[in-house]
Length: 341
Image (cartoon, rainbow, N blue to C red; front, side):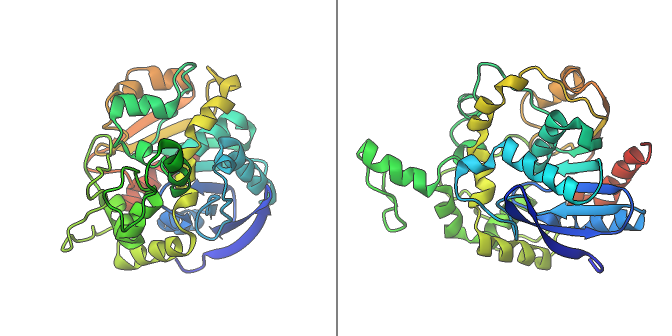
Protein backbone atom coordinates (compact mmCIF):
# COMPACT_ATOMS: atom_id res chain seq x y z
CA UNK A 1 0.00 0.00 0.00
CA UNK A 2 3.02 2.27 0.42
CA UNK A 3 3.22 5.07 -2.12
CA UNK A 4 -0.44 5.00 -3.19
CA UNK A 5 -1.58 8.60 -3.63
CA UNK A 6 -5.11 9.82 -3.00
CA UNK A 7 -6.83 12.84 -4.47
CA UNK A 8 -10.28 14.18 -5.22
CA UNK A 9 -11.26 15.20 -8.74
CA UNK A 10 -14.37 17.04 -9.90
CA UNK A 11 -15.84 14.96 -12.73
CA UNK A 12 -19.25 15.10 -14.35
CA UNK A 13 -20.64 17.27 -11.56
CA UNK A 14 -19.48 15.11 -8.64
CA UNK A 15 -16.37 14.89 -6.49
CA UNK A 16 -14.60 11.58 -7.10
CA UNK A 17 -11.95 10.04 -4.87
CA UNK A 18 -9.12 8.37 -6.80
CA UNK A 19 -6.25 6.19 -5.61
CA UNK A 20 -3.25 5.89 -7.92
CA UNK A 21 0.38 4.90 -8.16
CA UNK A 22 3.05 4.76 -10.84
CA UNK A 23 3.70 6.38 -14.19
CA UNK A 24 3.26 5.20 -17.74
CA UNK A 25 0.20 3.92 -19.64
CA UNK A 26 -2.95 4.13 -17.52
CA UNK A 27 -4.64 1.00 -16.23
CA UNK A 28 -8.06 1.98 -14.93
CA UNK A 29 -9.55 -0.35 -12.30
CA UNK A 30 -13.30 -0.35 -11.56
CA UNK A 31 -14.60 -1.98 -8.38
CA UNK A 32 -17.95 -3.64 -7.69
CA UNK A 33 -20.36 -4.13 -4.79
CA UNK A 34 -19.78 -4.00 -1.88
CA UNK A 35 -16.27 -2.81 -2.50
CA UNK A 36 -14.16 0.33 -2.91
CA UNK A 37 -10.96 1.35 -4.66
CA UNK A 38 -9.36 -0.78 -1.93
CA UNK A 39 -10.34 -4.01 -3.69
CA UNK A 40 -7.52 -3.24 -6.16
CA UNK A 41 -4.80 -2.69 -3.53
CA UNK A 42 -2.73 -5.64 -4.82
CA UNK A 43 -3.14 -4.62 -8.47
CA UNK A 44 -2.26 -0.96 -7.89
CA UNK A 45 1.10 -1.83 -6.37
CA UNK A 46 1.88 -4.61 -8.86
CA UNK A 47 1.11 -2.61 -12.01
CA UNK A 48 2.94 0.47 -10.77
CA UNK A 49 5.98 -1.79 -10.37
CA UNK A 50 5.43 -3.08 -13.93
CA UNK A 51 5.66 0.44 -15.38
CA UNK A 52 2.00 1.47 -15.52
CA UNK A 53 0.00 4.24 -13.93
CA UNK A 54 -2.60 2.34 -11.90
CA UNK A 55 -5.76 4.34 -11.19
CA UNK A 56 -8.67 3.10 -9.03
CA UNK A 57 -11.58 5.42 -8.22
CA UNK A 58 -14.36 5.02 -5.70
CA UNK A 59 -17.33 4.95 -8.09
CA UNK A 60 -20.21 7.34 -7.44
CA UNK A 61 -22.10 6.34 -4.31
CA UNK A 62 -19.08 4.67 -2.71
CA UNK A 63 -16.37 5.53 -0.22
CA UNK A 64 -15.06 9.07 -0.44
CA UNK A 65 -16.84 9.86 -3.73
CA UNK A 66 -20.11 11.80 -3.75
CA UNK A 67 -23.32 9.80 -3.41
CA UNK A 68 -26.30 11.51 -5.07
CA UNK A 69 -29.53 10.61 -3.28
CA UNK A 70 -31.75 9.89 -6.27
CA UNK A 71 -31.82 6.39 -7.79
CA UNK A 72 -32.04 7.97 -11.23
CA UNK A 73 -28.52 9.36 -10.74
CA UNK A 74 -27.06 5.85 -11.03
CA UNK A 75 -27.75 4.97 -14.65
CA UNK A 76 -25.09 3.67 -17.02
CA UNK A 77 -25.00 7.13 -18.57
CA UNK A 78 -24.18 8.84 -15.28
CA UNK A 79 -21.45 6.41 -14.24
CA UNK A 80 -19.91 6.11 -17.72
CA UNK A 81 -20.05 9.92 -17.87
CA UNK A 82 -18.00 10.00 -14.66
CA UNK A 83 -15.40 7.74 -16.24
CA UNK A 84 -15.20 9.68 -19.47
CA UNK A 85 -14.50 12.83 -17.47
CA UNK A 86 -12.02 10.96 -15.27
CA UNK A 87 -10.06 9.68 -18.28
CA UNK A 88 -9.95 13.18 -19.72
CA UNK A 89 -8.69 14.55 -16.40
CA UNK A 90 -5.87 12.00 -16.43
CA UNK A 91 -4.55 13.60 -19.61
CA UNK A 92 -4.63 10.44 -21.74
CA UNK A 93 -6.53 9.49 -24.89
CA UNK A 94 -7.35 5.93 -23.82
CA UNK A 95 -6.79 3.41 -21.02
CA UNK A 96 -6.33 -0.26 -20.35
CA UNK A 97 -9.56 -1.14 -18.57
CA UNK A 98 -9.87 -3.75 -15.80
CA UNK A 99 -13.13 -4.20 -13.92
CA UNK A 100 -14.97 -6.55 -11.59
CA UNK A 101 -18.60 -7.17 -10.55
CA UNK A 102 -20.67 -3.96 -10.94
CA UNK A 103 -17.54 -2.26 -12.20
CA UNK A 104 -17.52 -4.92 -14.93
CA UNK A 105 -21.08 -3.99 -15.91
CA UNK A 106 -20.08 -0.33 -16.12
CA UNK A 107 -16.97 -1.38 -18.03
CA UNK A 108 -19.05 -3.08 -20.72
CA UNK A 109 -21.06 0.10 -21.21
CA UNK A 110 -17.95 2.27 -21.32
CA UNK A 111 -16.76 -0.03 -24.13
CA UNK A 112 -20.17 0.12 -25.79
CA UNK A 113 -20.61 3.90 -25.59
CA UNK A 114 -16.98 5.04 -25.98
CA UNK A 115 -14.78 2.30 -27.48
CA UNK A 116 -12.32 5.01 -28.53
CA UNK A 117 -11.33 5.42 -24.87
CA UNK A 118 -10.54 1.74 -24.22
CA UNK A 119 -7.41 0.04 -25.55
CA UNK A 120 -8.30 -3.35 -24.07
CA UNK A 121 -10.72 -4.65 -21.48
CA UNK A 122 -9.93 -7.37 -18.94
CA UNK A 123 -13.26 -8.24 -17.37
CA UNK A 124 -13.49 -10.21 -14.13
CA UNK A 125 -16.56 -12.23 -13.26
CA UNK A 126 -19.48 -10.58 -15.08
CA UNK A 127 -19.88 -11.14 -18.83
CA UNK A 128 -21.61 -8.74 -21.19
CA UNK A 129 -25.38 -9.04 -21.02
CA UNK A 130 -27.04 -7.91 -24.23
CA UNK A 131 -30.26 -6.01 -23.79
CA UNK A 132 -33.34 -8.16 -24.30
CA UNK A 133 -35.79 -6.12 -26.41
CA UNK A 134 -38.89 -7.31 -24.53
CA UNK A 135 -37.87 -8.39 -21.03
CA UNK A 136 -37.03 -5.97 -18.23
CA UNK A 137 -34.25 -7.24 -15.96
CA UNK A 138 -35.89 -7.27 -12.53
CA UNK A 139 -39.24 -8.85 -13.47
CA UNK A 140 -37.31 -11.42 -15.51
CA UNK A 141 -34.99 -12.27 -12.60
CA UNK A 142 -37.96 -12.44 -10.26
CA UNK A 143 -39.73 -14.88 -12.57
CA UNK A 144 -36.74 -17.17 -13.13
CA UNK A 145 -34.79 -16.86 -9.87
CA UNK A 146 -37.43 -15.94 -7.30
CA UNK A 147 -38.18 -13.07 -4.96
CA UNK A 148 -35.21 -13.93 -2.72
CA UNK A 149 -32.65 -13.52 -5.51
CA UNK A 150 -30.32 -10.85 -4.21
CA UNK A 151 -30.87 -8.34 -7.03
CA UNK A 152 -34.64 -8.57 -6.42
CA UNK A 153 -34.22 -8.17 -2.68
CA UNK A 154 -32.01 -5.11 -3.20
CA UNK A 155 -34.87 -3.28 -4.93
CA UNK A 156 -36.69 -2.44 -1.70
CA UNK A 157 -35.42 0.73 -0.08
CA UNK A 158 -36.90 2.21 3.07
CA UNK A 159 -38.14 5.15 1.00
CA UNK A 160 -39.99 2.69 -1.25
CA UNK A 161 -41.48 0.96 1.78
CA UNK A 162 -42.67 4.28 3.18
CA UNK A 163 -44.33 5.15 -0.14
CA UNK A 164 -45.96 1.74 -0.60
CA UNK A 165 -47.25 1.22 2.93
CA UNK A 166 -50.17 3.68 2.86
CA UNK A 167 -50.98 2.83 -0.76
CA UNK A 168 -51.31 -0.86 0.08
CA UNK A 169 -53.02 -0.20 3.41
CA UNK A 170 -50.12 -1.79 5.29
CA UNK A 171 -48.41 -0.69 8.50
CA UNK A 172 -45.01 0.91 8.03
CA UNK A 173 -42.16 -1.38 8.99
CA UNK A 174 -39.96 -0.48 11.91
CA UNK A 175 -37.51 -2.51 13.91
CA UNK A 176 -40.08 -2.86 16.70
CA UNK A 177 -42.79 -4.22 14.39
CA UNK A 178 -41.24 -7.43 13.14
CA UNK A 179 -44.62 -8.91 12.26
CA UNK A 180 -45.47 -6.08 9.88
CA UNK A 181 -46.72 -7.11 6.45
CA UNK A 182 -44.41 -4.55 4.85
CA UNK A 183 -40.98 -5.81 3.88
CA UNK A 184 -38.23 -3.65 5.39
CA UNK A 185 -35.87 -1.71 3.19
CA UNK A 186 -32.55 -3.44 2.47
CA UNK A 187 -30.72 -0.70 4.35
CA UNK A 188 -32.75 -1.59 7.45
CA UNK A 189 -31.87 -5.26 7.13
CA UNK A 190 -28.18 -4.42 6.77
CA UNK A 191 -28.38 -2.17 9.82
CA UNK A 192 -29.63 -5.07 11.96
CA UNK A 193 -26.40 -6.97 11.37
CA UNK A 194 -23.96 -4.08 11.01
CA UNK A 195 -21.70 -3.32 8.07
CA UNK A 196 -18.83 -5.49 9.31
CA UNK A 197 -20.93 -8.67 9.52
CA UNK A 198 -22.61 -7.98 6.17
CA UNK A 199 -19.28 -7.39 4.43
CA UNK A 200 -17.81 -10.56 5.90
CA UNK A 201 -20.82 -12.55 4.72
CA UNK A 202 -20.72 -11.23 1.15
CA UNK A 203 -16.96 -11.20 0.66
CA UNK A 204 -16.41 -14.71 2.01
CA UNK A 205 -19.44 -16.46 0.48
CA UNK A 206 -18.30 -19.33 -1.75
CA UNK A 207 -21.63 -21.00 -2.39
CA UNK A 208 -22.08 -21.59 -6.14
CA UNK A 209 -25.28 -20.70 -7.93
CA UNK A 210 -27.52 -17.64 -7.89
CA UNK A 211 -27.14 -15.92 -4.49
CA UNK A 212 -30.30 -15.54 -2.48
CA UNK A 213 -31.08 -13.58 0.66
CA UNK A 214 -33.81 -15.38 2.60
CA UNK A 215 -36.17 -13.25 4.62
CA UNK A 216 -34.97 -15.00 7.76
CA UNK A 217 -31.34 -14.35 8.65
CA UNK A 218 -30.12 -13.08 5.24
CA UNK A 219 -26.69 -12.01 6.49
CA UNK A 220 -26.14 -14.52 9.26
CA UNK A 221 -22.59 -15.74 9.69
CA UNK A 222 -21.19 -18.14 12.26
CA UNK A 223 -19.50 -16.22 15.11
CA UNK A 224 -16.49 -18.56 14.93
CA UNK A 225 -16.19 -18.41 11.14
CA UNK A 226 -12.63 -17.59 10.15
CA UNK A 227 -11.63 -15.18 7.44
CA UNK A 228 -9.82 -16.65 4.42
CA UNK A 229 -6.09 -16.00 4.11
CA UNK A 230 -6.64 -13.36 1.43
CA UNK A 231 -8.88 -11.20 3.63
CA UNK A 232 -7.67 -9.77 6.94
CA UNK A 233 -9.48 -8.15 9.84
CA UNK A 234 -7.74 -4.91 8.84
CA UNK A 235 -9.21 -5.23 5.34
CA UNK A 236 -12.72 -5.72 6.76
CA UNK A 237 -12.16 -2.80 9.09
CA UNK A 238 -11.22 -0.49 6.21
CA UNK A 239 -14.30 -1.46 4.23
CA UNK A 240 -16.69 -1.31 7.19
CA UNK A 241 -15.41 2.06 8.36
CA UNK A 242 -16.15 3.58 4.95
CA UNK A 243 -19.58 1.94 4.77
CA UNK A 244 -20.40 3.13 8.28
CA UNK A 245 -19.66 6.65 7.06
CA UNK A 246 -21.32 6.47 3.65
CA UNK A 247 -23.95 3.76 4.01
CA UNK A 248 -24.93 1.16 1.42
CA UNK A 249 -27.59 3.14 -0.44
CA UNK A 250 -25.28 4.38 -3.21
CA UNK A 251 -24.17 0.86 -4.08
CA UNK A 252 -27.70 -0.53 -3.84
CA UNK A 253 -28.97 2.19 -6.17
CA UNK A 254 -27.03 0.63 -9.07
CA UNK A 255 -29.32 -2.41 -8.74
CA UNK A 256 -32.38 -0.20 -8.34
CA UNK A 257 -31.62 1.55 -11.62
CA UNK A 258 -31.45 -1.69 -13.65
CA UNK A 259 -34.94 -1.41 -15.13
CA UNK A 260 -34.39 2.28 -15.87
CA UNK A 261 -31.17 1.37 -17.67
CA UNK A 262 -33.13 -1.14 -19.74
CA UNK A 263 -35.51 1.63 -20.82
CA UNK A 264 -32.75 4.14 -21.59
CA UNK A 265 -30.51 1.79 -23.57
CA UNK A 266 -33.16 0.77 -26.11
CA UNK A 267 -31.20 2.48 -28.94
CA UNK A 268 -28.27 0.12 -28.26
CA UNK A 269 -30.29 -3.09 -28.64
CA UNK A 270 -28.21 -5.53 -30.67
CA UNK A 271 -25.06 -3.39 -30.68
CA UNK A 272 -21.89 -5.43 -30.18
CA UNK A 273 -18.90 -4.60 -27.98
CA UNK A 274 -15.92 -3.96 -30.25
CA UNK A 275 -12.79 -3.71 -28.14
CA UNK A 276 -10.23 -6.47 -27.43
CA UNK A 277 -11.46 -8.41 -24.37
CA UNK A 278 -10.15 -11.06 -22.02
CA UNK A 279 -12.57 -12.57 -19.51
CA UNK A 280 -11.47 -14.21 -16.25
CA UNK A 281 -13.80 -15.94 -13.78
CA UNK A 282 -13.61 -18.40 -10.89
CA UNK A 283 -15.27 -21.77 -11.36
CA UNK A 284 -17.18 -21.22 -8.08
CA UNK A 285 -18.26 -17.70 -9.03
CA UNK A 286 -21.93 -17.01 -8.35
CA UNK A 287 -22.43 -15.59 -11.86
CA UNK A 288 -20.55 -18.37 -13.65
CA UNK A 289 -22.61 -21.02 -11.82
CA UNK A 290 -25.98 -19.32 -12.45
CA UNK A 291 -28.11 -21.45 -14.81
CA UNK A 292 -27.42 -20.65 -18.46
CA UNK A 293 -24.22 -18.65 -17.94
CA UNK A 294 -21.69 -21.38 -18.77
CA UNK A 295 -23.59 -22.18 -21.95
CA UNK A 296 -23.55 -18.49 -22.92
CA UNK A 297 -19.85 -18.03 -22.16
CA UNK A 298 -18.60 -21.21 -23.83
CA UNK A 299 -21.30 -21.93 -26.41
CA UNK A 300 -20.69 -19.05 -28.81
CA UNK A 301 -23.18 -16.47 -27.49
CA UNK A 302 -20.57 -14.42 -25.63
CA UNK A 303 -18.24 -14.36 -28.65
CA UNK A 304 -21.13 -13.33 -30.90
CA UNK A 305 -21.96 -10.34 -28.68
CA UNK A 306 -18.28 -9.46 -28.11
CA UNK A 307 -16.59 -10.36 -31.41
CA UNK A 308 -13.12 -9.24 -30.23
CA UNK A 309 -13.27 -11.56 -27.19
CA UNK A 310 -9.88 -13.26 -27.26
CA UNK A 311 -9.95 -15.54 -24.24
CA UNK A 312 -12.17 -16.89 -21.45
CA UNK A 313 -10.14 -18.10 -18.47
CA UNK A 314 -11.73 -20.14 -15.68
CA UNK A 315 -9.73 -20.31 -12.43
CA UNK A 316 -10.25 -23.59 -10.62
CA UNK A 317 -11.21 -23.39 -6.96
CA UNK A 318 -11.75 -19.62 -7.07
CA UNK A 319 -14.94 -17.78 -6.15
CA UNK A 320 -16.22 -14.30 -6.99
CA UNK A 321 -13.61 -11.89 -5.62
CA UNK A 322 -10.71 -13.25 -7.63
CA UNK A 323 -8.72 -10.01 -7.76
CA UNK A 324 -8.29 -10.34 -3.99
CA UNK A 325 -8.48 -14.12 -3.52
CA UNK A 326 -6.05 -14.94 -6.33
CA UNK A 327 -4.25 -11.62 -6.70
CA UNK A 328 -0.98 -12.78 -8.28
CA UNK A 329 -2.68 -15.13 -10.72
CA UNK A 330 -5.18 -12.44 -11.69
CA UNK A 331 -2.37 -9.91 -12.16
CA UNK A 332 -0.55 -12.31 -14.49
CA UNK A 333 -3.65 -12.79 -16.63
CA UNK A 334 -4.19 -9.03 -16.85
CA UNK A 335 -0.57 -8.26 -17.72
CA UNK A 336 -0.22 -11.10 -20.24
CA UNK A 337 -3.11 -9.57 -22.16
CA UNK A 338 -2.48 -5.83 -22.01
CA UNK A 339 1.26 -6.07 -22.77
CA UNK A 340 0.36 -7.24 -26.29
CA UNK A 341 -1.20 -3.86 -27.12
